[in-house]
Amino acid sequence: MNGQRSIFAELARTMDSSVRVSSKRGEWSGRQLLDGAERFAAWLRVPNEVAAPLVAVFPDIVGTTVAMLAADLAEVPVIHVDPTTRQLPPGTVATGAPCAAPKAYADETLGIFAEPSAESVTLTGVPLRSQTFLTSGSTGGPMAVVRDASAVLADAEHVIGRLNFSKDAPVVVGAPVAHVYGFNYGLVAALLVGASVRFSGPHALPSQLARAVAETGARTLVSHPLHYWLIAQESVRQHAAVVPGLRQAVSAGGPLPPGAARDVLAHHDLTLFNCYGSSEAGAVTLSPVGPDDGPGDAGALLPGVEARTDNGELLLRTASLASGHLTSDGLVPLPLRDGWFPTGDLAAVDQDRVLLKGRLAAVINVSGKKVSPEEIEHVLAGHPAVADAEVRAEDDDSHGQIPVARVVLHVAVPVAELVDWCRSRLAPHMVPRRFDILDELPRSSTGKRRRASA
Image (tube, rainbow, N blue to C red):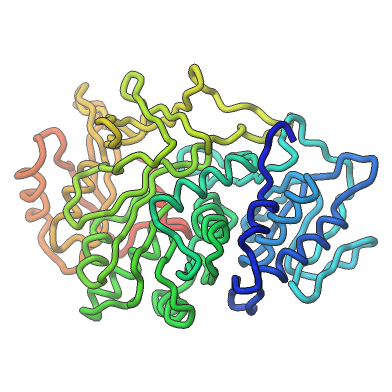
């Protein structure tokens, strides 16, 4: 359709019987999943009508894989929804639970069941071969991001090139596959090179991730920041690697918690990659993380991604760019500026490297001086007693705003020590005016920090 690539056609070349896709529910070959997708696609096609979108609500990788392939083959848009979501968008709902509706679809072997849409649903302007993802809303309210098949495949290819995925190196996925990063970097990228995939899930413990790596012989873990924070904490407690055997690990979906990279790398012989990107742009950078990396250093741009700034805001141009956002009125194209996507991130671009300076909406204005909370968080993370840190703005009558810090400690130290640490490394107006010591910082299930309001 209009020059669009086909996810089914591309993956059918690599998903042979040697490819294994597994989760706690069991294991299936690539051929079994392709056959299941063809059966499901035949049911999804509605003769002489515009088929309703497929709403895929699966807790594991098997249903998501088949829904992705079937919808692409049937040219039906699919909306991926986290299974914890209470209110589903209208459409043909596919889940892992049997349904008793008339003309319902049931695949007992793969555990895929679908209930026909009770109403006519048309997604105006949405590409037929598209995958839609609901964002986490970390920078505003949740949005539905529409990615056509060509953007999905281009994004996966960007990641493959940097990570050197190969057919003989299985991948363990801890990131949720209802989100762009788990879907594209853990699932599609692996299958595109014919690698086997084990899904452990976003709530897996470090011991469960270690078991999955050991059982599959995986060399790559694709997961979210919270998992790496948990691995770091457990490594410090055990003074040893808790997920041995990995060659590389990828963190995506948000910044790594302060100190997590340092503690993971101190106990594991692997390369830890941090992925900077968004649901709209896909992967932008994917670079090795060092224990002493500077604040906001997102690394080198992936091949095929261009970046520049406009009044300090990072703009991107890439083949993996989404089509737009899905609303009740249909597709709303991204608000491009002469073909460039405005990210809402403050950054500097030096040749092909991106240095992030914070969100436009998150900058703290201290007596007219702009302060990046991320820079202060990085300094705090360098203190050996600090396990996690968050800095936010608080209103102040004298200065307009002031930075305040919430800190989780490995071991108890006086607040005065943290103040002195910051004073020796930051300009005076950047030193937090208050330190709140907490047992933990609130984070989403994928490790994104839930920032407190002032």
